Image (cartoon, rainbow, N blue to C red; front, side):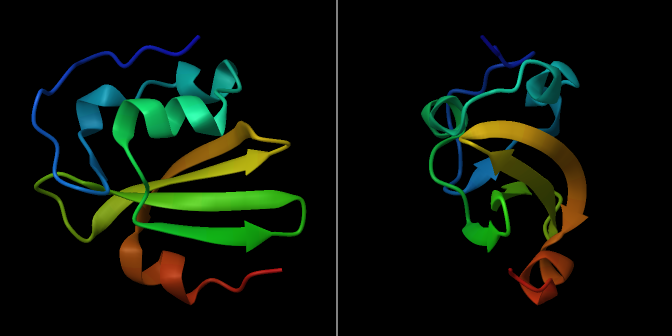
Length: 92
C-alpha cells in the first residue's frame, strides 16, 4: 500500500505537494481509490483507450501538476505535467 513520503494537514482542493509523491506510487500500482483517499478529488479526469488519467495541481507551482494514469483501476504511470498540455491532450 502506498504511503506519501510527507504529510500536509491543510491541502488546497485538487492539489498535492511535490514531496508527497515518490516513485513507488507507480511501482506499487496504487489503486485510484487510494489516491483519492490520500489527496482528494483530482482537478480533472480524462478518459483514455484503456483507462483514464487524472490531474492534480502542485501547491505553489501552478500551472505545474502531476498526471496519474490508471488501467483497470490501478496506476500505470505518473508524470509531472503542465495543466495547459493536459487539457489540450486528446482523449480516446
